[in-house]
Image (cartoon, rainbow over all chains, first blue to last red; front, side):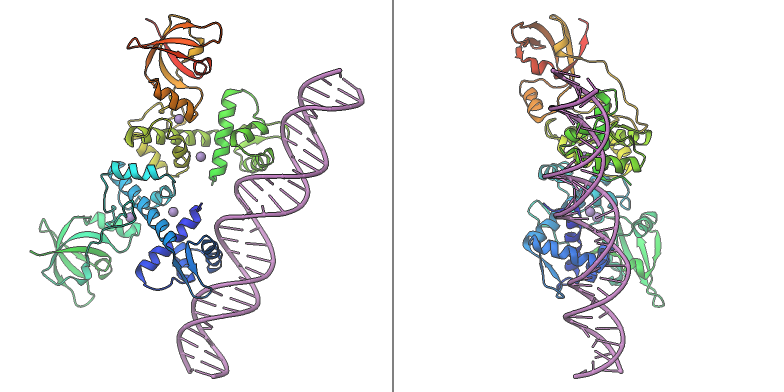
Length: 221
Length: 221
DNA sequence: TAAAATTTTTAGACTAATCTAAAAATAATG
DNA sequence: CATTATTTTTAGATTAGTCTAAAAATTTTA
Ligand SMILES: [Mn+2]
Ligand SMILES: [Mn+2]
Ligand SMILES: [Mn+2]
Ligand SMILES: [Mn+2]
C-alpha cells in the first residue's frame, strides 16, 4: 500500500526528473512539496524501503520502475479527472487542479478504466498535458514556446508551461485557450514583448513572461 | 478541518442514531467502524473537543447540529457519487459502495453542487436511499418490508435494508432491482418464506431473510 | 586546498490515529 | 444488595507524517 503522501512525493520526484536529467535533489523535492528538507529525507527513507526509489545519502534520488509506474498512474488519474471536471461538470481550466489533486488518490483500476472510456480516451488534459494510457505510455507532441517563434510564423495553442491559476485565468480572459490559432506579428526589441494576431484579425500584445509560458504547434501557412 | 477518519465516525454515529432514538454507545460505534472501543473513546474525545458531538463519559454520545450537518453532507456526497458511478460509468449497484466511500471525502462545495446538477438532482441513490439536498434536507418515502406484506398485496421495489454485496448481487441475479413491481402470492407458514409474482407472471420463492431486507412501496391495485 | 557556503541528514519532539491490556464504572442478576 | 457480567475508559505503545534546530557532508570559492 502507498499512502497519499507517498504518492504525492513520487509524483513530485517524477516531474522534477522529467525536466532535469539527473538524480533529484532533496531540496528540489522540498520546494515542490512545500515542506522541509528534513521531512523529505524521512520520506525518501520510507520510499527507498518500499523499493519505489533508488536513494543514496547525499547523492539524490531516482524512481525505480515500480515508482515510475506509480507516478505515471497517478498523473493519468489526475489528468483524466481534470478532463471530467472541465468537459462534464463545466469547470474552467483554472479551477480544476486542486480537485484533481484529491481525486487522483481514489483507488480503483476499474474506475479509472471506465472514466477513461466515458471521456472517450482523451490523450490530453485541459492544459494540453498528455494523459498516459493504461500501460503508462503517452503521446509526444512537438510544440514550441511563443517566445521562440519568428515574426510571420503561425501556430495553434497546445499547452502551457506554467499552470498557475493567475496565468490560466489571464489567458482565458484574453481569449487564449487550447486550439486558438495565432500569428506572431512582431517582437519588440526593448522588452521582448510580442504582438500577435488572432484568427479574427484581432491583435494582442503579450509580455515576454507570457510568451515564455505558452506552447504552440507551428502551422505551415 | 475534519479528517477522513473523523468524517467516517460522524457518519457512523449518525446512522446508528437514525435507527435507535437514544444516545449512541461506544460499542455500537466500534462495531460499525470495525475497530476497538478504546479507539472509539479516543476519537469521541477529539470530536467533542471540536464540538461535533455531545459526549459524556459512560453516557454515550449525540451529534451536535454542526456534527449532524457534517454527517449529512458526507452522506449527500456518498450517494451522489454512487449515482454517478451507476448512471454515468455503468457500474452495478453492488460495486459502488467502496468507491463512494473514498469519493465522499473529496472536498469542494462547488464540485458537489455541479455533480448534483449534472446528475439532474437525483433524490434517491442506486440503493433507494434518499439523497440530502444542499441544505441537508431529504425526502421521506413511506415503504414497507416485503416481510410485512399481506398475500395479494402488490408493491414496487424502492430500497434495501441490507447493503451487502452478496445481497445486492443476489437480487440483481434474480431480476429484483429498484422499480420492479411484484405481488405477494403467499407466505409459507413453515419457514416464513414467500412466493411472489413478477410483472411478467414469473414466480419466485424468496427466503424470510430476503423478505426482511427488501423495501416496497405498496400499490393499490 | 583551506575556509565559507550550501545541502543534507540526524536528533528530538509533536499530532493523529490506531492497538492491547488493565482498570474503572455501570448494568444485570440471584 | 452483593456479586457477576458488561461496557467503557485509561495507560502505555506504535506508526505515519510532520516540524525545528543542530550536526555532518558536500560543493563552491578565494
Ligand atoms: Mn495529490
Ligand atoms: Mn493539468
Ligand atoms: Mn469514507
Ligand atoms: Mn447507497
